[in-house]
Structures are given as C-alpha cells and as structure tokens.
Length: 131
Image (cartoon, rainbow, N blue to C red; front, side):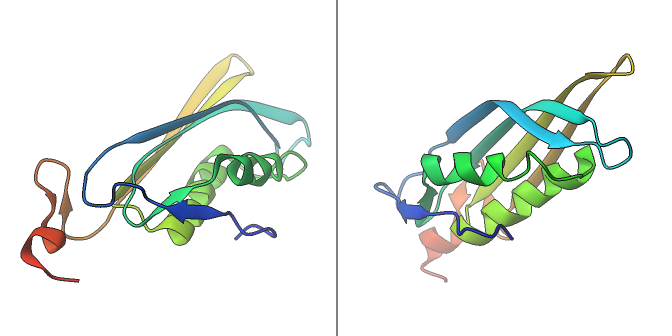
C-alpha cells in the first residue's frame, strides 16, 4: 500500500454501471536491475461501486513510484491491488504501456472483477438484494 492514503469520494450514481477511464501519460519508475528510469503510460479503467478515486490523490500516488526500483509486471499489479483495496470497484483494468528500452516495448495488463459481477448484466447482488 502507498504511504499516503489514496483518497476516494462517494459515487454520485452508485445504482448505475458506468466506466471511468484515467490516463497518466508521464509515469516513471526505475529499473531494479540498472537503476535507469522506465517511462510508461498508465491507464486505469474501472466501473465504480460505492467509491470513486480522487484524481489528485491518484496523481501523487503514481508520482510515488518515480524513485522506486520495480519491474513492469510488479508495478502494474501493485497499482491494481492498491486501487482495488481503496475503492472496491465492480471491475478494474490497469494497463502499463512501457516505452522502448533495448528496442523492445512492453504492455502489461492486470484486471480485477468482483465475484458475482458481470459486465453484461451488471451487479447481480444489487439486483437480487444480496450483499
């Protein structure tokens, strides 16, 4: 988890499925092998439930990786885990599009879907009155 809590706010339309797409085109972390900077575009797409992610807090959370040595696969999954923990979305996808290094580009996609939730039918627990 991040050292500073990622702030959230109440979803203004919790009864509706809608998608929020966030893009951070200037993400930076460090290669844990070389210590050189890695650059990426991080995209977060989610269907909120009761809470939405506050964007300024998300920006500062992502900046926190700037001086951290971490592999592409780890950072993408870490972001997903941390964001799911703070906002408990119905569904979330985090994509890390990492810039060319050594002639190779890498895209890492990590996804979460709440058990019982279906994109096509919405949240069945809400429809059936379950928790």
